[in-house]
Image (tube, rainbow, N blue to C red):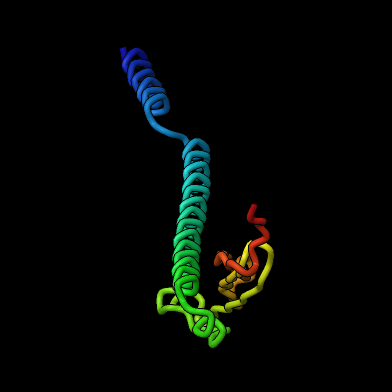
Length: 149
């Protein structure tokens, strides 16, 4: 009877151990799970930061392009004397916030289409985007090459 009771207790212990092993995690499984989770968080964090920076750079480039477009429109509406008087200008505060040493350059050339006005935003501090440039033409009657019948 005593042996039978000892055997039952031992069987209960073994079955309880098996139940714990089947239900819980071993140390190796826990280590692998933590390693995989940390790798996923690391990759996800790096991806989030990269996408955020790309979005921020695109927003700043858009601001710079709008600045150049506004200045080009202003230059196209000015008279020849007003255009000739300025060759360099300080950009707006929105552009200077991102690129503190940026400057706007204006260039005017004559060609067969008329007077070409070029506005260039020079960004010294950003190695990836050194300049943003737009050109527009003012039709000049003297430079048109159309022949009248």
